Image 1 (cartoon, rainbow, N blue to C red):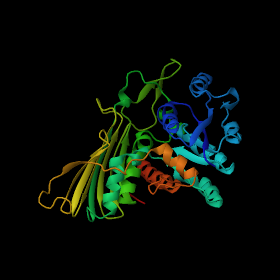
Image 2 (cartoon, helix red, strand yellow):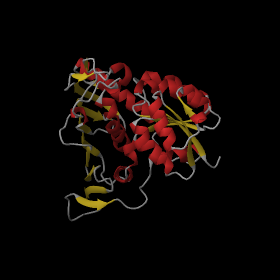
Image 3 (cartoon, rainbow, N blue to C red):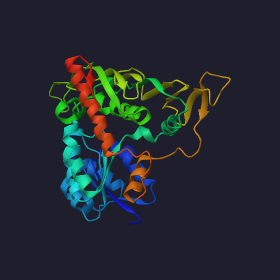
Image 4 (spheres, helix red, strand yellow):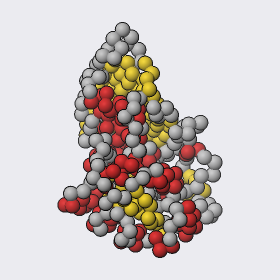
Length: 350
């Protein structure tokens, strides 16, 4: 196979603004089919891709069965990730799945078994591990530049929960989303923390709903929000480091602010993903006479894109930092434990 033929299930914002532009930049991939339950959306995206009507589907099963599709990218609401992924895996398709992987970790058990039997993996779309600063930080930590990790401070701030007249979309309903910012934003932070510092050992957190009601889409009244708008939690990492996490979609004035700080015995580093090519680092090995943080540009060689990484994997070239199904399951276990901790108000061991 010299070129990967990709079908996308779910033609909403994440597909339109991330997956489709990314795939268009891949010389060895082509979007051959699209699926969405909204006819207008299907036509809009299908027209933009110049797809024949026979390759525009309203039923995911039909896209999965299409002979012109080698790989399936799942860009749907969270509750549909696992049933669609399982069907695609059984059909022998390569899989890219939006985060969070599932509504709970147990839901991924059968998919894990099916892929293992076929000697396959799936990519989970933890998109921030493709930022140059994150990949370079991983490289430096693996080289031992910071020594034993002691602590992390992590922040993710958005104002999307405060947008005027935002309606009761699926993200605010537990049966469709599972969690709110915990799965939507927190999944990225949990994955980056695992990517950089290893597994979680235990956690204690609290999630809250800040905007309790939102207008129903049909204008018939107000609906009760069921998923969290913010979550703050503490973590003990298996390596011995402690961590503080703060996540909210109700931070006025913040479009998409992500800050990560890591401290070790021999040094420290931080990055702010508004500047994805910059890393702040201070350590005796690099700056023996100046212990303060220094701003440096990430060297060449730490650039990767999510879509090219997926295409390369399907064509037999696996990136060393590939976000695997196992990563998705591990992240989901942390999210499950945080949800439980918020309800029971105590530490949960992992």
